[in-house]
Every structure is written in C-alpha cells, then in structure tokens.
View (tube, rainbow, N blue to C red):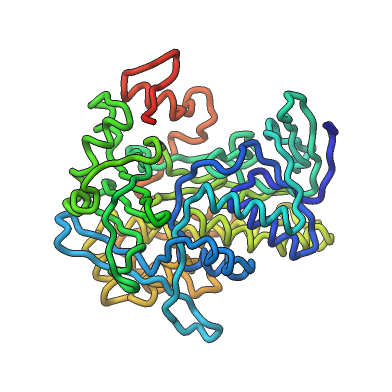
Length: 471
C-alpha cells in the first residue's frame, strides 16, 4: 500500500452524499478519491426520499436505474393524528422552469441496496475508491486542511493529501470531532431516542396514487416528540421506527427489542392495524442524541456536507435530500477554487456555508412548529399555505427556490424566532433544541456518550462487556 497519495479532492465517506459529490465533481472535470472504511452493502436508516431527492437522481441520470430496481414508488406523506381518526397528506411535487407546481413521484429505498448502487455508479463514472479509515485531519499553520492521515485495512498507516477535503462522514462528523470546524452543539431532541427495524407482513394501503397509494410514507403521531414511521422498502418489507422519550427506555431497563415490542402499539391505534404481528427481518437499532449543529463547517481546504455538519429531526426524511443537494451545490465552487478563482478569500466557501445554513434553518423552523403547534401546522398545510408547504416537504429550501416563503415567515412569527446572518453571527440556533452551555461536545468535562454505553445504561444487561442487542 502506497503510504502517501495525492489528489485534488478527497471525499471522506462513500454513502449517498459522498457518491453524489463524486458524480457532480466528475461532471466538473475533477476526479475525486472516496475514502470509505465500511464494506457495502451495510444497513442504514433514512429510507424515504423526498421529491427533490428524486430530482437530484434524475439530474444524475439515475431515474432508469431506480425504475429498474423496482424501488417502491412514493406519492406523498400521510400523517395520522394521535387517535388515528384524522390524517393529513402532502403530495410529492416538482416545479417546472416557470415555477409551476406539478405532481411527481419519488422512491422509498432499502439503503443497503441504494447506497451500494450510488457508490458503484460513482466508481463506474471514474471516481477512485480507497478502502481505509480517516484517523486525523492534516492542517497548515493557518488552519487550512491539506488532507487526512489514514489507517489502511492491513493495519498500516498513510496519508492522503488533497487540495479540498469533503467531509461526507454523516453523523460521525469527522472534521468536527477533529476540531477543524467550530463547536458542535446538541439540541433538546436528545431527550428522545429512535428505535427502528424492518418487519414482514405489514398491511399497506392499496391505492395506485394519492393519499392511499400503497407505498407512501406514514407518520403516526402520539404527542410532542413521540411518534412512529412506516416506510415500505421493498415488496415485502417495511421499515418501522419509533421515537420516544429516552426516560421511558431507561426506566424500563429492557433490551431494545423488548422495549420496541412493548411500546410500539401504544404510540398510535393505526399501528396495531398495520402491524398485526411483529416479524422482524432486521435487529432493532437504536440512535440516541441525534440533533446537533456544527458551526464553521467550511474553511480553507474543506467543506462538510449534510449530516456531517447538521441534523435536526428525522420525522420528514430530509437527510438524504440535504446531503445530495449540498453536494451538488458544492461541486462548481470546488471547480472555481481549484481554478484559482477563490484563492483570495479567507474562507473561500463562506457563501456556500451561509446558503446551506439558511436552507436548513427553513427546515428547522417548519419542524419546530410541527412539534410546538401541530394544529396550526396542519391548518397551514391544508388551507393557508398549501403550495409553500408542498415545496418545503419536497426539499425546496434554498433562496433560489423562493425561500423563506410566507409559510416559513409565519412559522417564525408563531415561534417568536428571528434569523440573522451578519458577520459571524448567523443561523442563531435558538428554539427547543439549543443548549449553548453544552458546547463544544469535545470538551473533557462534557464527553460524548456512545450508543453502546447508552444502551447498557438502559437495559442493565451486559454480555462479555458489550451491550446485548436484539437480533
């Protein structure tokens, strides 16, 4: 193994964000190196694609491949109220060149298959995949990132030197943990925890389009920050997950599977009808502490993409959309940087950072209003701001897409929230998820609790020093 490699662009992480970034960079005439430590396929959550996810895939020329793989077709999202008597629906849509709204479709995906497809497509088109794990960011005296140190699969160590490093490591937040970025803040959604698995034998709707289409996403509401999802991922399998107060899990001292089985039906009456039995085809996975924001996520020689700098709440499935869209936005800027057009900037990617923050701020304000004032939110969806809400649910969140819309501005008024983007004070992370006294997370007095340690605390069950997982 060559211990030192050089490339124009290094991508840390070969998931959908890294693969999409590679394909968009190749269109700019840049051949990137993707560094990935995991073997694909591997299990991952986040199986529901929004309308703008589908549009990114179409722009990448992948629509025919999505159809060939027979991924379930999603026409929209149906949200059930706490008694399951009432529901509301948001359809998948797109905008044409004249900004006229039209109905469209997107897909639900089994992430192990979809992620592997995306990675293989990037390699097929010319990206170079290197198997290895980034262990340390390399920096100049002025803070510029010049690549990473790597541990190769054979245990040896080396370096990959790059003019630009893209952090597509997702919730691993590699560059934030390396203190390359600004601080990483955690939000109050860490009082919740997500449990999820795949099941067979679930009952779907039978329609071919609209609210009753058989492969739509279902959101099942219980009360604030307490809900479940139902996402078909193939002809036989449905992804089912629940988000509950973490205190409930800690109090019961059950394994994840035991807790899932005991609590899933209590969330919403519709779940009992949809899940007559719980036939798992995947172990019960757990993700605590999943809301965070990384400040200063671009700089000399680096950009963090998607979850590697910010994640709010999974309820409306924006993760894949945001990471692929940010990858698409970054590619032409990286071309300009490599061509010497941005060299005079202290942070050549500063405008990109602000644009990304503004977009995710729009999502955050929408999600926070859903939790804080669900009845007002439903009114906005159904009658007052129907088209603007359809745009937001699709993932049209950037200034070029007429955001923030009147709907988002109304949300901010109800939340008593303002947003400023002057100098270094931007995207002020106010609202229900922000704890400034707990940042940065990497300080010794505020250690990050691992999922494994957290599960041990909840179940009180250990085996050979490891938490017992459902399988």
